Length: 314
Figure (tube, rainbow, N blue to C red):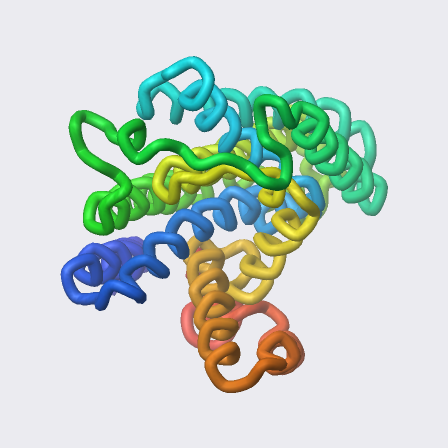
């Protein structure tokens, strides 16, 4: 079997399985899987910047929150329909990523990480200060009657799952195409050796900025989808915790792999879910499992698959 055929079979098989699970999963796991697919989309966005470009950001929560509020505020205060509001959410996140990226990329290394963290904290404080409209930490619920596209009620389990699946599938396939194209290969080259890439004639600054904008737009799409599908927007999604979570999901699943973010998100969700049913100290048990995984599979789950089984795994 050729490498391209294995890629199509692997990623197509994953999407086929997720589609089939819509009809097979019991109600509890059906809801969890819809949430996992939306948050895995967020992790994929983060992976483009961290896993493929080598830029460690601690500010991605601001992009997730920008997409969330970019959708929720026009719906709540202006009566905008769900579909155009989804577009405003993505646009808000992409614009914020363009501005933040243009400023943060003036720095490198640890300084870049700190600058993105400060941007995220500023965004969080802005949401709190604008509490008249955002309702701050309390947040607000989006009316069920407004959560419809083309007459389809996205608050219902079936349509919600399929909407989450469509978003995840589109972003997964987009990422797969990007990383196998020249643009994606240049991002990987920047991660491995930026100076050498620059000497080869590539404008590394422009490509890093493009990666930040693409990463921010995908993260914003996930935030907008989360608000639309689960009917809530709150400032808690802009806290530093939501910048660290996608980092954990990507590291667990395998940074620089296309399906790694999904695997890491799924693993983390069910690890905490199972551990919480066993003991009140479930976070300690989950932490121990994560430490062991980090020690024995430092490249993440799919990173180990790439190292041991399939070296051509994208």
